[in-house]
Amino acid sequence: MGLTNVSVKRDFTLVGFSDQPQLEKILFVIVLIAYFLTLAGNTVIILISSVDPKLKTPMYFFLTQLSLVDMCFTTSVVPQLLWNLKGRAKTITSLGCAIQLYVSLATGSTECVLLAVMAFDRYAAVCKPLHYTTVMNPQLCQALAGVAWLSGTGNALIQGTVTLRLPRCGHRLLHHFFCEVPSMIKLACVDIHANEVQLFFASLVLLLLPLALILTSYGHIARAVVRIKSVQAWHKALGTCGSHLMVVTLFYGSITAVYIQPNSSYSQTHGKFISLFYTVVTPMLNPLIYTLRNKDDVKGALRRLFKRKQNLQREIRK
Image 1 (spheres, one colour):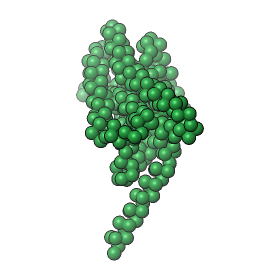
Image 2 (cartoon, rainbow, N blue to C red):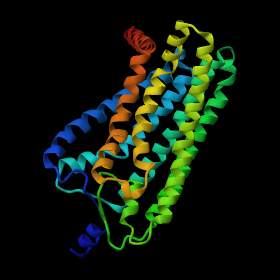
Image 3 (cartoon, helix red, strand yellow):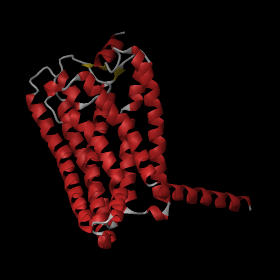
Image 4 (cartoon, helix red, strand yellow):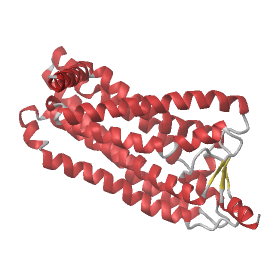
């Protein structure tokens, strides 16, 4: 009994949406469907980008990285969320909370930088078409992807460790559905002004700086297209950049609403629904956006994949 009580005391309670039981039932179904679609859609993109020679391009290389990030990001949050939505227990262990905090922070930060890298790729495709393959060579692509992953991991190690080391004086009631920095620092029983400032500056570097680079890239793209003064050029640029622009708008539009604001104005209910959007909805929509806008590439790759599988089966039968 003593061990059980100690164990329970060490757990965090995720309040989540427990004040709205009917909403929990609806959210369980929505989140479950969204999670399966996320896994299926991103797995398809990773699969076809890896095996189809015609998709061995910088755009699909970065898209594969984005799919991998999205799968890790949503998986760090959704299984625990589904468990809490389904049952009465709303707890998560200290270890589980720490893992969730580190992984979600690392992958979320990585996505911020990766989207900026993808914007540079789109800039090179539109503004430097004749030198595109030279500029976006495999070595540079791998280096840029590595920078994105290292930036995200480094931010998670710093922010996550600082957050977890804050004294909580027994406060373990988390008014959120997962362990996220803005809500975690509220549990501290000390002055958190320094932590709020640190979080704000980290957000400036990993949110606003990549966003500024994205806007700069698209500024150059718009200027290059305007100079051409061709309807066909506009359509080609939209086809090249449209998917990325939609993904950037969805992701940055939601995540900046949570991180780029004073902590005192961080509404618990408002924040939970915004967090639900960028942890569950955006990873589901990303592969749909890219496959719909590049449906010919994806259809062709799937067709070649199935044809190759059929040929292999025929050879085995022989």
